[in-house]
Image (cartoon, rainbow, N blue to C red; front, side, top):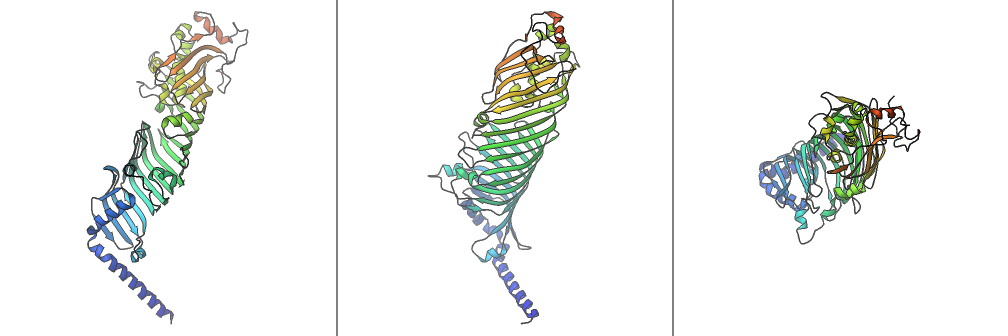
Length: 479
């Protein structure tokens, strides 16, 4: 047989194949709407959820077979889990010759997902199955590639009291596999790779934009890296490993946020801008648990916030510290609260009266030349490692522990220290974040009035030049 004859034969066979496929698909092309109910029933049976196609269903045969569904809804027990303006299924033409139709790709336009965990720890996609006589195992699944465009997510955790929203998200997900097993252990049996980008993410007042991450999920281990986002004008980066393979979820988080504007992290209840400038945040934490409380109790790692050339508004600290009468009425704890705003978050500062920082003359301010706030966290307790700041003329340092799991100050002391690191004035704080007990400032000498200024010469009048060093960290004494 000549080459020309072979090509003609192959062409005839190919044409016959295409005609056969067209004959199979032709009835559906003429009346695709007739298959909507069958597709809804098949999708519902396969997923164990309620699938409804509210809009038009169409088919296109070229360049490949595409099924387009409009206004798709997925619910469970009447609660809507997902909806999509449009869903497109790319189907392998050859699979039409068999009973096993193979979907090669799924593309969702403007999908919206609503995931909720109730106070019993059960997710809304599990509820219907859990109410059945027994939790029947889900079959093993191997999904085609999935892409989402302009999607959104609302996640509500009533057990932890958290809510997260993500908007205008693009997702490219491949290699999705789920091993057979009960719905409750779904995350342990999931594997996939994905690329995700969201224009905006909101969580309890925290706003991030231009979020991007890569995800590698295998047998319940979610490895998210790199993870980048803009946070209040600063570009942060990090990675997160969430391991659901064991009896208790385990999390490892590393985050870096260089040069963030400190004013964006000050308490929202402050009526005026308390501080300005930029700082660097670095944190490495490990946690385990199913609830927020369990995670806080197990938290271990390091947190560091550092900055230079900051401005603290509303008070002339050097002026107030230079006058003993003023210092008797001035809480250095309020100044110390400035340390907490970065590393521990606004929750730690809720009990402080930040208005007291604004008692100075209008337009008064303090230059904070250096601020270092380094903490070591063990089992939910943060211990100050190197916590101090220097103004033009003074240094203020902090010692003690903060119990993040129980929202408690544990013997925290804030002190005004001299060039030798000796405490000239100290104040203690204890109790809960909500209602802290703050002792009056305790000057470490019996001199009265302006005589405190003598301490600037070295604090040697009472101690003979010796003292128990309160601070020996990296923040140098003002010159």
